Length: 427
Image (cartoon, rainbow, N blue to C red; front, side):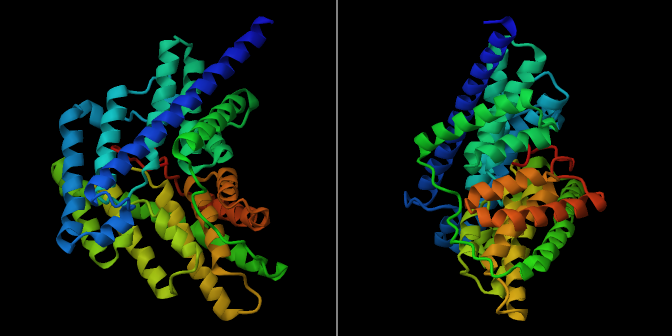
């Protein structure tokens, strides 16, 4: 075999191993979260929202605050001042670094994220999963003493595997890393990413027995005359997603202006979430279970609106306080709620010519995600992998493309360039 061919074969082999490592890291983090929830809710096997609903009022308020305090203490005393200020996430390791991801920084931040998540923080848990998966790729590159370029690629392969496992979307996980991290869809990098994502996803399915993230009823489209509605929803999400990111940045500046010790700041963020959860316990966690309910049409419009506002406030409190976690999944939540409200309004105005609000919820998730990440191709593919409904692709392409265009026209930054200091990339 020629040297170049042998080199490519070995690179694909190491990419596959990085995919395996990403699956194991994702599975381990999920298992730890499940064990913690079993301990909190008396081994009932509830998710975070069910746990919040079952807890007494005083504990529903105090647990997020206590979790925030503990998470802040972890960051305060297990990382030096320089380590807390440094960006150690995998994106930096791939784009401007040498492919070396900090072991101590990744583990400490992930442990802090775990405490925030299981205590009810309004955060995405997937960010730490992807960070740990990328760490596995970095360690593999360091152990094998690979050159800098190939070590960076293995970090990217680990991240693609973690993303594919976290969202049960191997192609979207690949495009996430290619479109957002590498900013390239060239085959020399896309091939290894695909192998890592697919192998990691298949292994994770075996370990976790993972089902589709959302159980979505068949999406029925009424007529081509609905296209103006899809266009309007895309434009709306394109304008609102930058506002949501601006709200998060404003919360960060507000908490920083208080000049409180880090543990106290995180405790305050948790307390705000706890107080909001007295009214709406659904703000706990990343929002998966509530999105599933929204897709089934289980909420009246005024409850959806209240929940949308409460989730935006609680996510701002968690992220703004400096808690380690992602906003990728809460972004899907925001898009789904906006889509449901838009679909309900459309049905009221044109009852015989508009599809179910579930259709608009799905399109809203994609369009809001495309605007927030400015990665429309990844958003289209991710929603398609989640729904497995080919009918949604055409309107989804329209909504995502327009949302991306509006966000670019507004000059809005993506969620990955918003100045976060304490959180790993918002996956």
